[in-house]
Length: 88
Image (cartoon, rainbow, N blue to C red):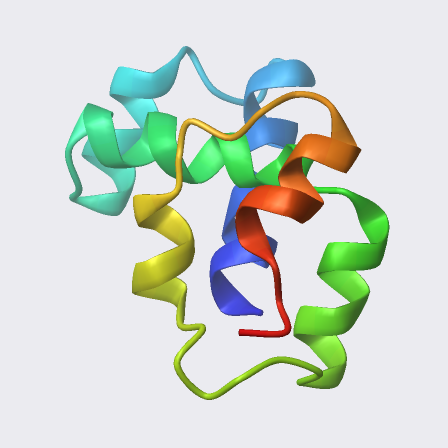
């Protein structure tokens, strides 16, 4: 949940002009620009996937590390569902 919250926060910073770019976020958060870019993509997860993660309705093997390794995610939510398959 924390990773998804971070994704939305960082995307909001960019889209609302509260940050001067991915480089500024990476400096503020002391992470690489590559990491910021990967995390921000999680802001576009299908809402039902996010709900299942929040509820804990997935296997214990489905971790934040596993989720971030799936990036870049497909834009289409149906394709995300197939890729992520929370029933694993």
